[in-house]
Length: 125
Image 1 (cartoon, rainbow, N blue to C red):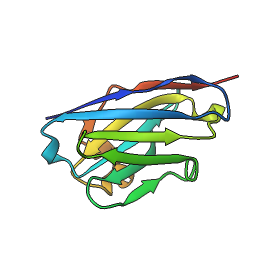
Image 2 (image 1 turned 45 degrees about the vertical axis):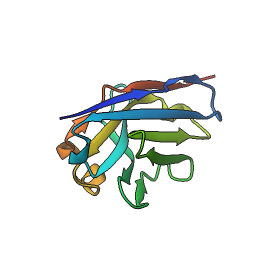
Image 3 (image 1 turned 180 degrees about the vertical axis):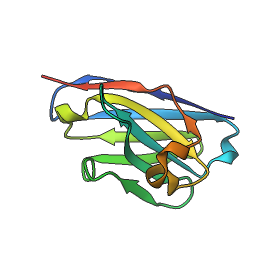
């Protein structure tokens, strides 16, 4: 079992930045990739980005490419999401995810194995 805990959400104004963190614990060696999803009220869960746990592969949704950056600290078992130039449409609950498969993060999101509880990000003036 893998436990994921997000932190760093909050209220920011349009154009500002925010960094989310996700700490992983438990059977950490069961995962090969971590990523971020988001879910806005009344909308389906949406893939944001993913990173392989070894090497440098990353993959982003078109809606956040060039604004959001995923990174990791393997020693701390922590995933980050740096969000810049935030827009009102980025408002959502952001969820950390982990899985054995890197490609499954965006190609088969319903099969992703581990999820955090989520952290609220609100972008509003």
